[in-house]
Image 1: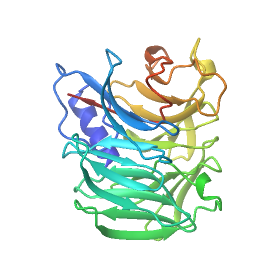
Image 2: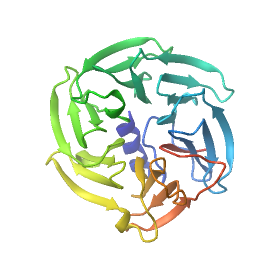
Image 3: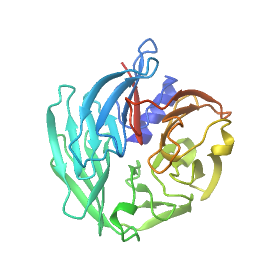
Length: 300
């Protein structure tokens, strides 16, 4: 699960983000790569963070929008594409392809700790599905988001070690934690059209808040926002739609600054921000890379 491997990275002090399932952390002598994708971009790519050059590209089918991508422990690429989720190899071979039903949209695809996969599917009702290594369904349940428009329900969700699910609701600005029966255990107002959530130590939720132009940290035990970073926090930088926010082990944040809703196309597409809100790395506007809403750092 995302939370488990982030904690491993913290303990090892690797210095790079492991926000979701990944293999053993690589040595510091290996270069950091970014697996990137985004709504409105027709591909998934691997970019060398230092050189900013694309090293691998996987093209999407027309109409596919990828808002979640990661590298699995088996060194394969897992991604959501609105109409389903796929697991592919570096050689472009499709291992499995799960497709949703009519009227549904799929935005979360992540590997779980025991080698299964978690899919979050927007619909009426919404569904959470688990697959085995072959892509066959092993578990499934439905729940109500309280948001009738399917596209406005949620993007990236996660599963906790308590077998609960944290869901940032896109259409109402609340983060909820539910159990398998769909019962809401916690609800916290973050504000904005929420995109992503990461679980940090101490029960802190790190949430990307979309067109609210900010990300926040929520103390889930108290149900309050304890830290906010917005455009005014970053001199010379405008936060547009704050999509996925990845926590690095050294306290930095890697932020997907998606620009699909803004006329300002010159803002950085990715930012790395330190604990003092200083931008220490950025990916500027470039014709080669499209809008980025999902990012997965790794070393190779």
